[in-house]
Image (cartoon, rainbow, N blue to C red; front, side, top):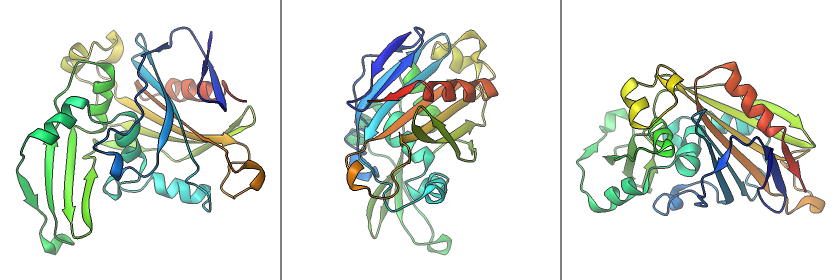
Length: 264
């Protein structure tokens, strides 16, 4: 077992099969930053190669003041083109487009298309497909979105994730070790092909299993939806987990990780 410090406020105890990747990048990439809804810091990235999993931790200020759990659930299940739903958060923060894709966006022209005014407000949009490295992080990034869409509207430019096919499970609440977590799950609907398993060096049992993504938003209980002068500097903890295989084991593993988080 190993204890990782996540910030001045949080730490987590993990088994030895989790190894730090050495990455300290804090999402989103600079190109996406103006369009992302919150600011994250203190990012820690770990991988579990035998399990084909990636685990990430980050903290943020509190953008949830004045809201409640019902609002949070509704927000996270918003359509992806709204720019602030669960899959958008994965796209902006934990599984964003690769640096190679960002470079391509900045240096390559792509054909633009226009939505007909009969389908809603007219706008121009440009889609860029992302080149990929053979890393585990790029594998999960492309499962979330295979590219980037720039949408030019009367209200300015928006950068959106043309997300894959997912089922968004209902929100769940977990209370453990003095903390409250709101847990969201995005279950991939497409199985991993044998070609993808070979290209990304995935575990032998990966073929045929879809990817499963989790996001937990936590803080010391009670969750600070209401402003409290005694807790005005409470940091919100974000935990993201991706692994192969939509099954009860994935959910249990993630819940067990959350139960190993401690406050200082």
